[in-house]
Image (cartoon, rainbow, N blue to C red; front, side):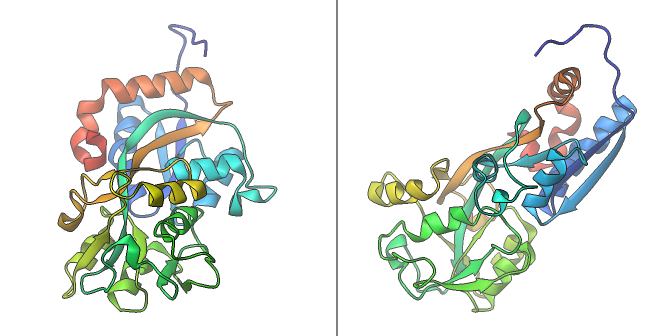
Length: 279
């Protein structure tokens, strides 16, 4: 990526799209600082629909977004909701690491589900397919224990229309399990409820066969102890990885270079504005 020295000027404006809630908090911690220091007008468009974010990026309606390994891999593969003509694969460029991330498989504190061996036919699982592309990371978990062979016939899918409903469906006893971010406000609120919450661990060191079954479904996921989020999640094994800030591959390379350079040199200015900025 060739960059000319001494000729760069920041554009007049920049637009980012992000995940509603946590994603908006992370972008909102440094994007205004970038605008203030460079003179650019900044705009942030949150949405629950991950597919829409990458569609808007592909067609130039926004300049950047963010995504984790599962979301990005599905987009590049044209998998599921990314298989449509206007949401299919396109070349993108990662320009910065958003953070180390961790997520996990949450049940209510009094749930009969203690380990992956308890994941059996008849389990009620929060269905994210109506608004989220990375349902695959949940389906991979359901086959970890080896007891479920048919995800449609042996799982009771409980629909959730948005991220705010996921944890609540579990707390209300309408679903047994949900895949959630332990840093989200809805998960934090769920932990404060009378029953509380627990985490079903996915540890490939203890259950290598289960991990192999998982990775056949979603091969880019890695596992490890969760390092931040609700108190109950710390040290519990969940999914971990690096989420990325990204733009289109044809974005001006000078802009990409100077944006990454600014994020590096000005880290101290936004580091403490959100916990994800510290990793």
